[in-house]
Image 1 (cartoon, helix red, strand yellow):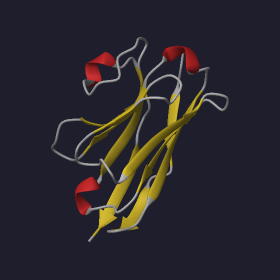
Image 2 (tube, one colour; image 1 turned 90 degrees about the horizontal axis):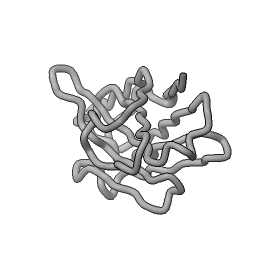
Image 3 (cartoon, helix red, strand yellow; image 1 turned 120 degrees about the horizontal axis):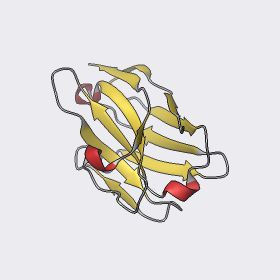
Length: 124
């Protein structure tokens, strides 16, 4: 059973930065795409960013484009999300997810494995 464990969340002031990390308990290079989603209280889970198996292709939600960078290190079985210029609207629980095929889109139903999430709170 594959497990994903997120870390790096916390409380930050608006304009600040955070780097989220997702560690996998097994090799992730064979799973191809990885992604970050987030869910704010009372809202549906929404796509943030995704990356293909070798990091050569990335995809971002418009809401974070230009402020965030997703990256992966298959040798270390980790995926990271660097978030800059954070806004109060970025406050949410952030989840790491892994797909089993080539899909790297925004539909959470296409991702097979999920972490437990890490809380990000941005104060104004």
